[in-house]
Length: 383
Image (cartoon, rainbow, N blue to C red; front, side):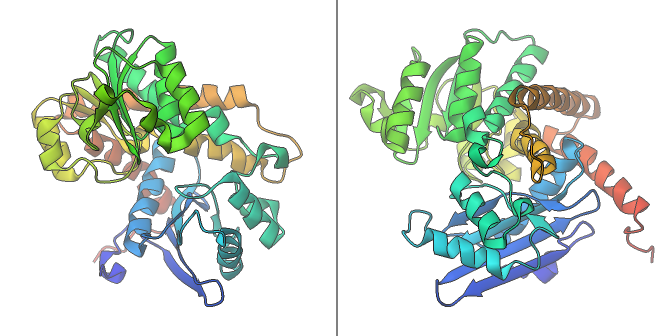
């Protein structure tokens, strides 16, 4: 077991709150990583495998993500150990909100992550009788329709477009492989398809599909809308490949948009893409990034590429108690502009300084957080 007391560093976490409820069996955790730039903000995830260490890692990613997009919130994340398909889900979510009523929304504003839906965000607002308690609620309640707009995937696609254009490579005809054809992966594929890119592989938790001649994106989007993850079962037998092989097909751009740590050094050796754009949080391990960098494979880091959700959340945070909805077109324009700008900043800095893009992105985010800590008098006292 990871001892978080030994993991605390100059950045945080500032607060780790574990909660439970005997009646519902709810077990959850809130990690506030760093609030030098503002209130803790990050999604709430639900899965049977959630751990404190996992949530702490993700909270740190949010610290860097907010700083990287230069928006004034702090890093935080929450997790609930439960089956998101359980019939008791609402009772568990309500118990989680009640147990953290002293933290939400004073220290943390709940949001959406793996296993949580707009309905769950609405339940948190209802349980705490506070519109400010959560973002990601349904549009009918004044929320930003993240999945409908595809904000995170929109940003991931814009990061890919910016990186390809910077390298002088054509977008039209570029072969794209997407691991995780969910809300993020599907929106990414749809956006890149608009620019003429060719989707050659995709996957869900139910399987993987590959066609070197290209997959029909509108057809696959319709199948996903109808069948969800089971859409892969509709593929022709010749298109089915083993789970995980979508990461190693011959392509120009690989977009891991599923789980963390899916690309380790062993997988990295087999990757044939020249560009990786991280749609998921933490999809590559540090050693894998080193190996890929040594081969000349360029990576757009997760907290740069997938920050579209955070940018949209910035609008949603402002609108929590407003009578007016944010303008969808303005959100998408801001996601595109900030993501493209940050992608170019990071890739140019990495090339200029001879470091990996993750190091360049981290240095930029750290500088912004450190300056906020300095101004607030939070920097460590020199020995």
